[in-house]
Length: 302
Image 1 (tube, helix red, strand yellow):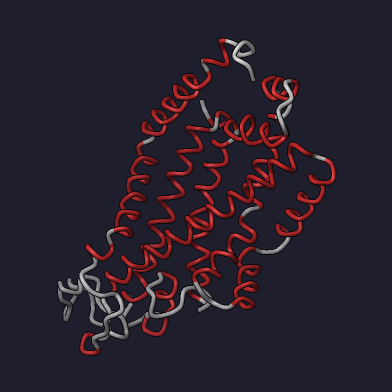
Image 2 (cartoon, rainbow, N blue to C red):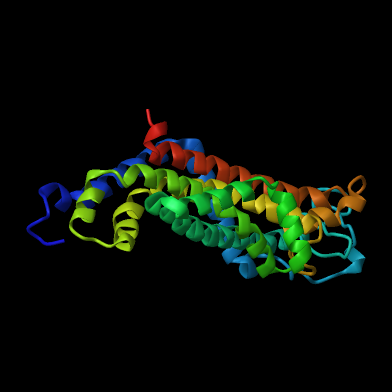
């Protein structure tokens, strides 16, 4: 596009976009509950990154003399093991801290892979239309027809447990959500004036999709992906609970909950504290993502 063809409105677009972004961030900061939830999520991320520094013990170190030791505030507990120990005498707090790494890493990796695939597929379906749209839309409909967890269990049963396999199994269907969002936004955006102008100036399809349409539809995609991350974390914990996820001795919240099932009546802390960690992180992500939706999606603005 030549310089002469640019209008004053087009030249001011970056500044206007920055101003809108700052206004949306102010709206998000005004939502106190969402802001506190975002801080909780950040604290979990920092805890995962600094796990070797903040964990009081090696998460895989066993001590049978401390088997099923209760939390520090209960009789028989010790502040060196503040949340108690599991059936092998491993420090529960240290394993929760290291388990944060697994949950956040798998959640972020799945969302990154799925969102990338979903964006590309949604752009192609919404802009190219025709047989491309039909093929992608029918594939999305087929995948949505299967319950997510059962679908993931089947894939894990075929591929076998492991970190890479669980990311692939969850991303295999997760991409359909951002794909549907991007397709819908693209169907609307492709008819706008600036896209028509780029098309009239001879811009290629790839340029229009990636440079003209994509930057203007990212906000709802980011919001949806943030919401879905909480769902992915629950699915990872569910697969690990069933023994199809991350394998021992690697600390995983779902596997920790499963390990404490046999002792839930007399040693409730083995399962309870990892379950509370899952609850806090998922709840914080959900509330923070709802705040992002309210701030960045004009359809939910007052």
